[in-house]
Length: 233
Image (cartoon, rainbow, N blue to C red; front, side):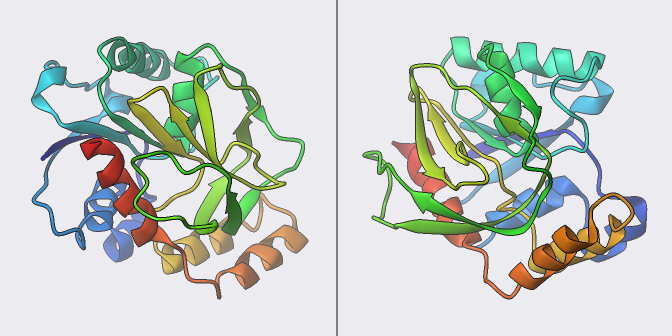
């Protein structure tokens, strides 16, 4: 399968030698899946987007430190591109920022949550099991790093996973978009590094709670298997 990565940010340069950049994290995320995949990367911040959407079996976004409601030309271009994918019912996997981009493209509301920062491992309840889902899991633990949250959904959106902190954690939009507020492409060590680097931005109690949560193993492989099942359904 051929995959287009829509890159929406860069790993801080001081950390790239240890963890690589975000597109490499996405590629590593799929490395244990026994299905041949090839990747093309598009730097959306530089206005780069696929010109032939029929060339790809699916599209996937990275996260971003930007907010989807920021008045940035590249964000507006990306929202329009996602609307194009929606119109042609192309498969799209939205990660974090991409999860929220889909909401914006569907004219829903995304805003800074009054619940504050979500960092570390987020434990979520599985509340829906669509036909494509290849197991009957009751929960999923995924690394997160966000302040913004989707606050409303359209009628055709199905919430798959939720928590009290993030009610719309995994969402299926129609038959062709699947998105997650978390970061299944991240490693625990990258999350720990980023949390420590943001001590000046996040309250100390939240930092410690986030770091303590990292003893839980993230269910990255579980979500990746769902992606493949969704794309092939």
